[in-house]
Image 1 (cartoon, rainbow, N blue to C red):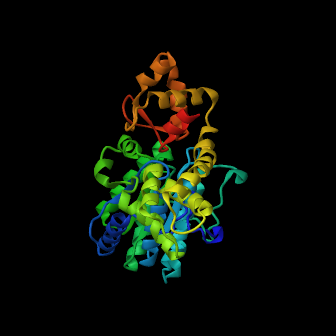
Image 2 (cartoon, rainbow, N blue to C red):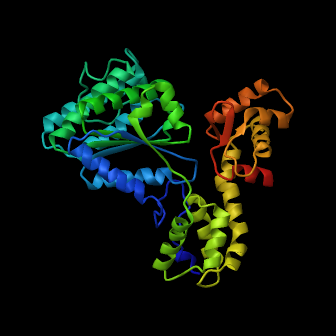
Length: 393
């Protein structure tokens, strides 16, 4: 098979050639956009799932849908060591530019509010060298979105932004990736702002994506967040969708898989989109001809596993300290096949230690995003097949 014509794309956040199994989410989002544009009440959206299920890809696809309808859009990726003001200001700057409002004075005023919101990040009286300049060519509007209280400021900012969008009969969509990494105060402020704009009927929607414990993070910030967002669990693909993700790109290059190859690939990948792309790429490069067979998959599987061991699993394992790696290996040993989570007491039992003594390692792994806690007293890997990878080592 010609490697130059290899259609598969195992990249972080890179859209696969065939976005299979996500039509329900795309269709539902189109309905949300239309309802908001017509003044109908709708909730913001939260996508949750493990690493490698395609949350970022879907987030980008939803953003493209909003752009096609003339909405203003902005995207940011949350980080544990960074507050919301700077990245959100950059995202909203882009959203205002995409709206293309014809009234220059209104646009300048709103950009000035965005700038005030951003510059407040340094605090009152900060030295010039410590102030962040958002690259907005508009004078800051004093007394608007610059109180220093992130909740008050975000509500004011969204209110002004929603008014500008409503003037044109369109809306603004803000996309937040890795949403669980927002600082607690910023999560609380974002929930409050979403609550306010939904009550006001302003055409703004926030679409967040994050790990499976994101709903718990939001609920801890604001109790009403359970009713504030529409939650969608993004999971691995079923057999039919996984086959489409492999077959459609191959057919576009005049190639095919036989039934045995498709069955072998589903068994190897478990239907996880990132694994499908990784195995598809390796199988294509090593298969001698079309149609691709189960024998070709067997030959290529070790190469795909080596690639995943370095780029997908290994890169994450390297972020852990020796003590944290010991904890991860104990998690793998304590996890039974088919179970998504394991009691922390079982991990301690494997190591022969008291659960309390392992709290620092567990908390550090939670902060690094290598594990998550979906319910009290239980933990799970954020990466599918990570336990099997650790046991193989």
